[in-house]
Length: 580
Image 1 (tube, helix red, strand yellow):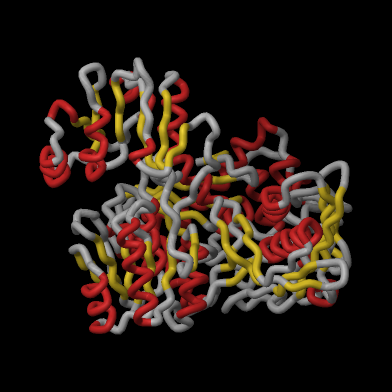
Image 2 (cartoon, rainbow, N blue to C red; image 1 turned 180 degrees about the vertical axis):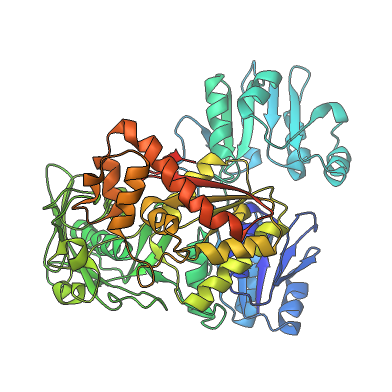
């Protein structure tokens, strides 16, 4: 059993990650005021000192602690560490993402270190209601302090108990614009905690800078050394899989792109410092950082591809990287890495089959100008067991990956995970369910619907028909289906499961679509991948072709969800919505 110490955005994200397992766990908050809809987690509330937390862990057979509390909850962090040590339990710290410390900000380690200047007459504090009593000495005849707090009765009472009047308080509001709020209040100084990206730190500092307001920021306290730190849902899942292998029904894995990046990071580390760590940090495309196991050869570093429980041909493959100084940043494909021989991919024929996502990961993780060569021993043999030869990728495997993580794939388990996500989306009260095939389409859809909560977005993989039927079962009234062209053409042909094992690209049907859209059918004659049409179609023909594809998709999808208002959005390779 797992106990999450939450009450924050990170706590909510941790719970959503564990919900995917369908396994019971506990979620603890101090006040019980955070709204959550959990199907497998049991919520508990009330402050837990070391004795109470230890007793709870013993009574409920807790074998893993997840500290996802606020970064400044130093007492709770110490309590979690003490309980973990006393009961010999692993403790995971779900940390926030933090931007680099801005040099234009005045940083302090303690409230006692805050020094105000003459002429700074109005100070706005966002340090939290518990800090008010410690800030009161900064007030004086020529200086006023304002305290921004949550609009809760308990917070107001606590503020007044520390000597603040109602006139000294202002309140956070949903969707608050920091620039407009600071323009309204016009403080001379803004006091902040280093609350991280999820705490709005970047927006607050940017707004203050724009108005010439001095910013004083309180550095976050250090975490206990014994914590195993993650800073996102993928890292949390992998850490839970490490300590509790049976918690999730299937184990996640790494993409070849993540493995190549880890090998390159390790090779550069050895080159620069002589150190050869067993694990290196890899920044994923969404900013999350995970630790990846690596090894070393004579003049290279390597990472063993771990596909988790996904049936991947490349599982166990050794992916190597050689990093050398150069006058520019460049990426090469070595032994066992295929080459594109046909158009329609991220890069033209002749280039190594290293897709855009992994290239960007390498760029993000390797600062400076270096020549990076990725190779895969026996990659040419492995590639013969993939679709690469059919797609025109010759000589080896592809280095691929959008999110950096391989979610475990089995039809039954994946369909059940989709069902759980749809149920959670319905229970969240979101006004619309938004369905995407994967990370790229979901990013485009999130941009289209920025106001929706994260629970509203569900990935269907290839199971379009079954996911729509699940939405119908949940009686969801507004549904958006985002689809990219390769799957869309199969869907337009009535193939509601778009996996390549079960649905094939029908060139004759594509010609019929082009004819109906009054486009030149020769565009379909020699393409290898349907997405090549985005480059071949003249700009004036893209809109009528997209509309035709969407109309056919709609004719097959709407009957599956007759009571809902269904919107279908066609997404191109750059993540732009080109048809609806």
